[in-house]
Structure formats: C-alpha cells, structure tokens
Image (cartoon, one colour):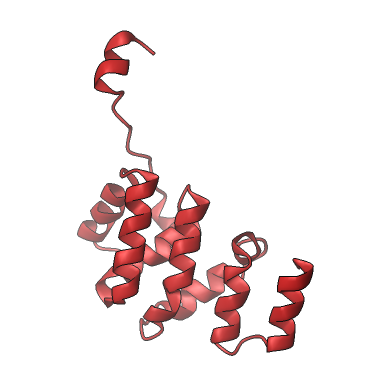
Length: 136
C-alpha cells in the first residue's frame, strides 16, 4: 500500500454480482441499489438492514433477501435473517425460504435460521431446543 493510499484511502472496488444467482427479477434500479448497498462498509450495511428490516417496507425486501443469502459479512446476514419475518407478505418470501433451505445455506446462519423456522411454525419447539442445545 502506497503512502497516498494510506493518506487518502484506497478506493474500494464495487464487487461484480451475478444477478442470475440472486434469483430475483430485479429492475435496473433495483440492481443499482444492491450495488450501492454492497459498496458500503459492513457497519453501514448492518445499520441499513436493521433499519429497513425493522420497518418491513416491502420495497426493501430485495435488500433483505440479498443480505441474508449473499452478504460478505456474517453479522449482516444474521441481522437480515432476524428481520425476514417482517416480509412474509412479499410474493418472493417463499423463494427466499427455499434458498435458505438449500444445503448448508440456512445451517450457516444458526441459531437464527432455526428460530425463524420456529416462528414460522416450520419446526416444533422441541426441534428448536434440540438445535439450540446440540448445535445441530
């Protein structure tokens, strides 16, 4: 890292996103919103997810969707999955649950994934306690 990079900070490159992998039919403005979102710091993205997720505004669903499945920071993913239930009325909610149910996706977000499934009535309290107590 050069001295000017240290002084002025190195410009963060915007990551390339495979929107086909994301699985949502996004408009160009929606894609641009995700690009801007991921160019923010981990702390800023976490704040965005918490604020937008708590509001439950359906226009923010795609950011919660993206964050819970693909964000580079596990804590941002945790923040998103904790707020997914605020978006149950979204037409793509089932698609998000299906993606989280794929092998090793939801499991990587434990214990929040199991807590979400319990609140949705997808697993019993006994199953939740078993996952929480045994880490499985």
